Image (tube, rainbow, N blue to C red; front, side):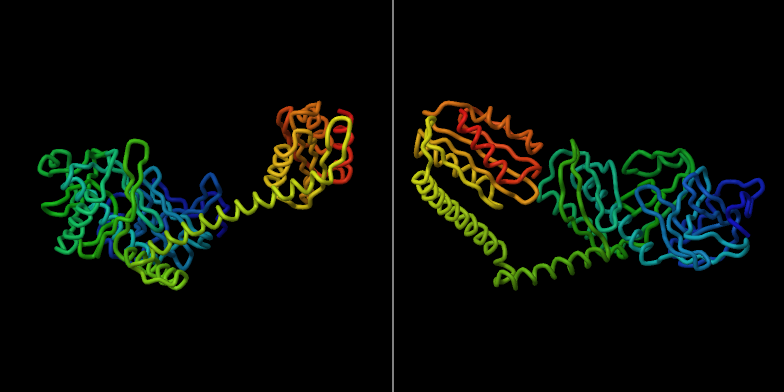
Length: 418
């Protein structure tokens, strides 16, 4: 049967999913299930999706990403709940309606359970210790973030909240879920205001956290294993905390330890001295760069003197000209300035051939007539270039529409005219 036919397995009088159809609420540890295909359609973007009688696939929601896995061996690439129906976006359509076997990517699901429960614990820890409210939450592929409704966070506060969170994990407290009505809410000390008024699901860590949530969580805090805050940053008037939970803590430790071992080998220093060794290398590098710059300045000064001895006398001063190949434009500019400092009579024109583009610098001392800015304005159209400056010093660069030799001679001609 072809999925392009509009009503492949059309469900008559289709009704939205009820809670009993959501197997992930009945048991978040379900790894596989068997059900029947109710409908198969395409969305506005042409993506194929299937609707099942019941499902263990968690759809994106509440800061938690969707589950992946397979349906009859076909990859599930996205899961969304739209208008009360859970859409399983699949890599290819089913050929025939009938029984469907679903397999959850358990590693991904359990990771999300650890991370989401860890977020509850850390948010509650910040609330318990300091009254810092969590206003948003994001579960990423590598790290989680919570946004705290504060403008500053100290190292000591982060450490205290992290310590409390890990103590709650170590105590292996139960994580309970409960469906309640609005009238029953007054019996619970909720951490934040609810965004729904029906089908209210509470996730409870007794005597610590009571929170409305539709995500999947493990049965106990011990399954979260650990929480580690990695960093935090200011986001507008909030503090965004980056952290990891569960197996991600070990992954982070493994990655960081691997990099530390590489650094100890590269820097030839023990782990405890890495920071000092790196700092010294940076300072040495800065000193070396300063020494190199000083030596370059000395070379430029010698080069400027040499150029002056080979200058061409004219009615408008001593013309100093030269062509360079792939030289730094900053060095060319510095050389031009050095020449005019040594001689107020100098008129300088340099061209730098930088392969696909041409650059030039023109400068003069105080004595000669003429404007370097005007000469630059005449040269720029020849290379479709951009540049600027003033009467004493100007530069430009553009496309190699003419040869470096042609640009050089044209510039000299303008210099001699002035």
